[in-house]
Amino acid sequence: MATTQSPRTPIKPADLNAPFFNIREVAWLWSCSVDTVRRAIKAGLLPCSQHKKGGIILVSQDDLKAYHEATRIVAIPRRAYRRQPARARAAA
Image 1 (cartoon, rainbow, N blue to C red):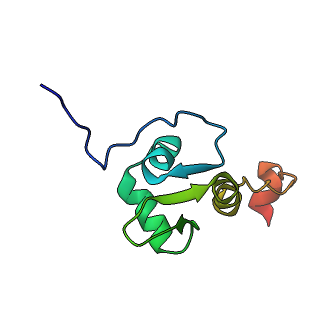
Image 2: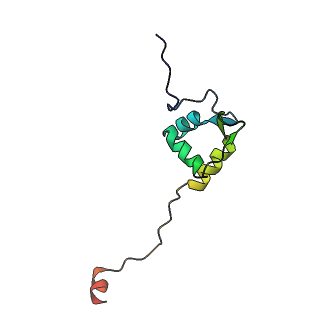
Image 3: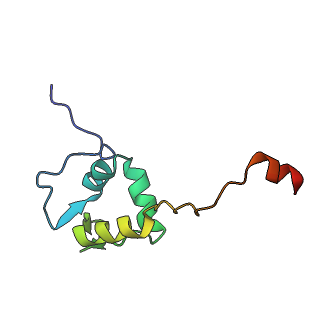
């Protein structure tokens, strides 16, 4: 009995260096659901291309890198400050 995967199941790309990925492959790369990728596309955060209506939606590797850079969280360095001794804080 042949089984088929759901179209919402992320799949590993055959080539990780490919210039384009479909939505299921992007979901596998991001370790998220296909719906999360679709929401990012619908919100305009992730550009994509589709050659004909109802066809396969493709995302370029350059767009994935641009999305990663735009949504990357960077740690803000803490300001260097000098702690005052306990007596000085109590007197102030």
